[in-house]
Length: 231
Image 1 (cartoon, one colour):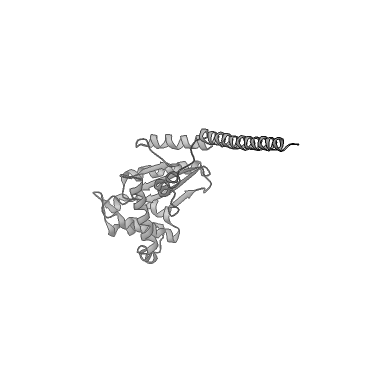
Image 2 (cartoon, rainbow, N blue to C red; image 1 turned 30 degrees about the vertical axis):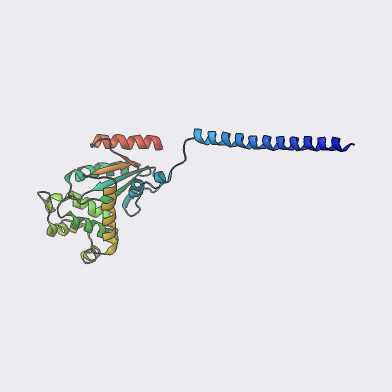
C-alpha cells in the first residue's frame, strides 16, 4: 500500500472517530434534556424555604399537651386562653368529637395569655402536667371561670380554690409553677402564636389549615373535610 493511501485511510478513521464522539455527546445532551423535562413536568422540588417553613414548626411543637391517638391522621391544634369564655364553650364540642373518633382525631392545646393576669392560670395548667392532671385541671378551670375571672381579669387568689376537686399536690404544683421547664413551654407557646399570627382565642388549625372564618360550623366543616381526605 502506498504511503499516500495509508495517510488517506488514517484521515478517514480519524474523521469516523470524531463523528462517533459527536454522536455520543449529542446523545448525552438529548438524554439530559429528557430527564429534565420529566422532572419539570412532575413539578419543582421542594425548596429549602418550603421544608423549613416556621409556621410548620410552630404547629408541630412536641411540647404541647396532646389528647387522642398519636396515629390519628387529623390533628387539631388549638390556641386557648383559659380565661376566655368562648374557649370554654368550644372545648366540650371538640372533646366530644375526639370521644366519637378517638383513633382518627388528635388534639394539641397551646396557651395564649390574652386576659389580664391569666399567666398565673397558665402556669397552674403547665405545672399540673407534672402530676399528669393537665386535662382535669383544664376542664375544671374552664367550667369554673366565673369563680376566678371577674370582668375579664383573673383573680389569682381564687384559681387554686377553684380546682381543689382535681386533687393536685398544691405544694408541688406551686413549686413546679416557677420551674424552667414550665416557663420554657409558656414562652414557646407565645412565640409560636406570634409566628402563626394568633390574635384571638380560641384559634384552630386542622392539619395545618386555619379556619376560613370563625365559628363552630366552620370548625366542624374543616374537621370533616380533613377526615374525608384522610380516611
